[in-house]
Amino acid sequence: MPRNHRKLNPEELQKAASAPVLRLEGIDSPLIIESIRLLRKEREYFVHVRSEDGAEGISVTNSQVEYLYPILNRRVIPYFIGKDARGLEAHLFELYRYRSNYKLQGLALWCPVAWVEFALLDMIGRVVGKSIGQLLGQVIRRKVPFYVASGRRDSTPEQEVDYLLKLIDETDAKAVKFRVGGRMSRNMDAMPKRTERLIPLTRKRLGDQIAIHADSNSSYGPAKAIEIGRMLEDIDAVYFEEPCPFDHLQDTKTVADALSIPVSGGEQEYSQWRFQWMIQNRGVDIVQPDLHYYGGFIRSTRVARMAAVAGLPTTVHISGGFGFIYMLHFASYTPDVGLYQEYKRGVEKYGGWFDSPPEVKNGTITVPQGPGVGIRDIEDLLKGAESVEGLS
Ligand SMILES: [Mg+2]
Image (cartoon, rainbow, N blue to C red; front, side, top):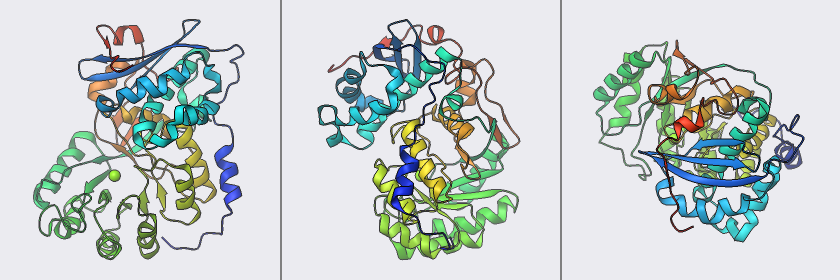
């Protein structure tokens, strides 16, 4: 992107990041956390929280829970028991210090924190009758434009475009994302010349009306990334995601500096300081914290506020089948989320959990209504669920 942005000072970014996020008006008495439990029902995992007064909240985890549950049960849940949920913002830092949890920092720590945070926000929202968006800001959006993501690399260019057309047909999407490169592959492609053939073919066969995003999942060094980026410029792509190894911030910046289309990144990032570096130095043009991997709404909102100071959008990365629901809530109150949010399907599976299922129509999805995350009936949903204790 053109580098004509103004010089930012770090204090300005830190001030944006440290402003309170959670709105506690109307919650006058303590909400003491009595229990937090990990539950499994069929292949879905839930975190259920309950206050001493019997208020309840629930979250749906991503699949990392299958190996991260001991960290949840041993290092995260014990911190929260007996604490006032209204202090959630401050708890995030104290939890990070608790029993030297900071040594685990990465998605192994922040995913379990996110699952508890989502459930606590759901509980607080149910207590005061506010949606997540109303708890964390002003609801400014009820319909969210989305791109449908392919997620494949096993396809030839022709098969991939056929698949994208099928996804567009099935979801009424106005935008798509496909994968380029070989995934963390040191410049190797998934199959010879797949990327070079796929990029022009998508524009040719999808036409000019479909917005195109491409993700290399850390495939390239800067020279090759710029070469692929030029091809994406030629088809007027919306953005180029993770062109270089995700934690090589300088290489990513080199690519962002060179290209006229935006470079996006941050899905594996876990450090507020490094997000600050990316924003301060324009290491990316669009920041992409993952609501699970980065530890929840509050931390991701802090990143979005820093990005807003720099005039950069925050387009969250999605993990977990249910993750698009959390994305919808984030988009409901975050002023600049970029043009399109990711959708990998899921309304068919999860829509029935809500009073009115999110509606996928004409390239947009509606944000769930109702308090908290909007799930209609926790008790009904958890019928038959079993507790996952292990190593606690
Ligand atoms: Mg990605």
